[in-house]
Image (spheres, rainbow, N blue to C red):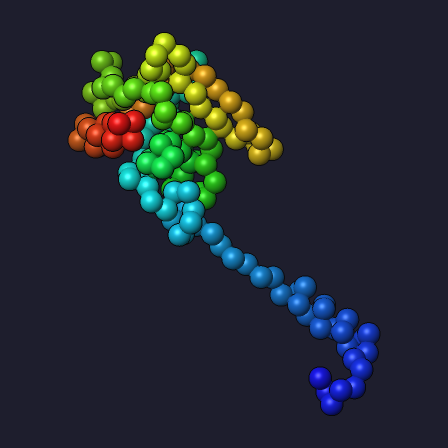
Length: 155
């Protein structure tokens, strides 16, 4: 260091100021190795019926289905890295909706309720329980792909 001379506080302070003024950014995406979604078995757009809402309260969400753990994550859009919520698929059955041509229903196994969690605006986890979770795929073909993928997860 400069011929073994002592570095002044002024010099060290200027280096510190330069470092702190230069933002270091590492953008993590949902498909990065080690991320819980990087080995998703299916992902894409579906509509999710808001819990306890009228038939018109369908919200378009981007979904990612993971096998390990078996969970269905949903996002505001396909660019978001943080999910709005998720549905653990243990103790859940999947069925074709009898009311909607492109619809799926996640139903509780063993007479329980379907568990879920969503994140509040402050980032807190808000647990939920549902008699049924209703989803609509973009097409009937897409619905059958989601059906097969979810069935694989719940074994």
